[in-house]
Image (tube, rainbow, N blue to C red; front, side, top):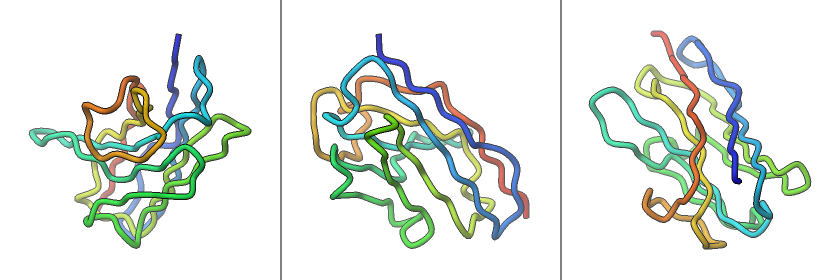
Length: 125
């Protein structure tokens, strides 16, 4: 079965950086688009970044563009989210997700089949 295991969350001061990692198992990782989503209390889950199967094409939400970078290492079955210049409004639980059957990136949650357990990111002011 498919498993996605996130790591790298934590508490950081505003202006700091964190790198999240998500290691996948159970399917041929290099065949599927991957995404990072976040959900803050009382808010809908939103896609902050997504990447196609090869890493050649990416998407970013406007709120994180220029600060976050999504990347993948298909040899390690891992997708990353580098988060710089963090702001208190970035505080949320962050989830990685694997596309249901597509190779391209997607910002739509319903296009993802598998989800990680989530990792908390807290940015203090």
